[in-house]
Picture (cartoon, rainbow, N blue to C red):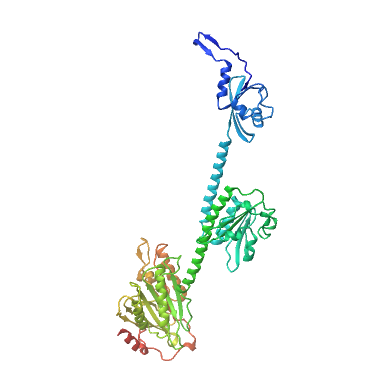
Length: 574
């Protein structure tokens, strides 16, 4: 230790009557030895000239440039000089590759001391902590944003945006080749997202890309020559590439693609590469899930196409209006259905069907599809409603799946004279259709029958009605009358309200009538839970071309049974 102290070198005793017995004052050599033994670096200076009076052993080792008798403001140590000049209490600066922190403490009016320590390791740990905290925050944000959508293009866009914000100056995703073409999406810092396709043959022009697309571990960035990248990889204005990193995007059982990162200057540290791999794993899982979801949606759409209500035909002299609401709007299909089967021959009748399969959702929709296809095949050889229900009952009982049943109403439409429409009806456990007459009255068709698919022997009591021009027959599922709502939210809509609603539609067009009833029921439910609802209306047009009018006007009740079909119904009942 070097020192310049204005103290004597011998030990002496001091007597002070006010403080008691004599006190031994340590010799300067003992004080200097004590300071040298301290692990903390101490520099003693004068308050006026900032002259360095003492530098203990720890300070000499930490700051060899300190000179006894020199000035703390001479600029040899910039951080110390700046702190002295500004009369600051602390400073932190780099000396000889080490970070030194100084703390100033006054000793008396003429002297003060700087207490110094090496804080290099502490600052390094703090920097590492901040870097790890930033990485964790980035991965958390990446997980939140990537899991927010199952749309594949949105996931790709989110991935390149996150990569450019934290990992690189440019990011590009290349998806596995499909039909010898690979889709890609790219983003450069301060630019806009670009996308396109690549021929499979050019993928090997990017170092490490084919390996990444095959799912192999990433090649370290230092092994990739950025000068070998093709011109199409980055836009022309990007500049010289300083470092390149190609990382696979792990997917579900197969790679979801590859992530290409490029930096203009600084290379990728091992920590950067590890962060990129973790990020790529999360991005790959999100992209793979989005791709799987897209495949499932496409498959579901194909399957739903045959399960959704069909586009209604337009038979001559008859109006057909349909409406369907699934209990689960997201699924769009359910257990209620309707269908229309046009005759195979010109002399045949158009057959309309409305039914309600037990259950809801996909399982009910599958049985619905089977029933519709069975009826479609039966209508090629038979158009009598009672016979169709009887044969369908036998088909359902022969199915391997038990406890599956359906209620149905089937109608065979034919034209009568003077623009009237004849409708032969049969039901199997289904609510009878309602008929809106021209005078506004509403009546139920006198039909009944046994549930279909439960017992081998069923009873069916068919009937036939005639619709004058402007009159309508409404086939509906029980989801309409059993819709719960009202003031309590638990009261059923009921047949009485349905009759009143139908009566209020007197003189309205067919499509407006069906839409009005649908809206009234929706208002009744007011957003609550409901069952599937299906409606199919058969209406005689108000005006009918003369060419469609036939001879032989019917007589008697509007529910008179068509004599030429009486034998068929008798066979069905027996």
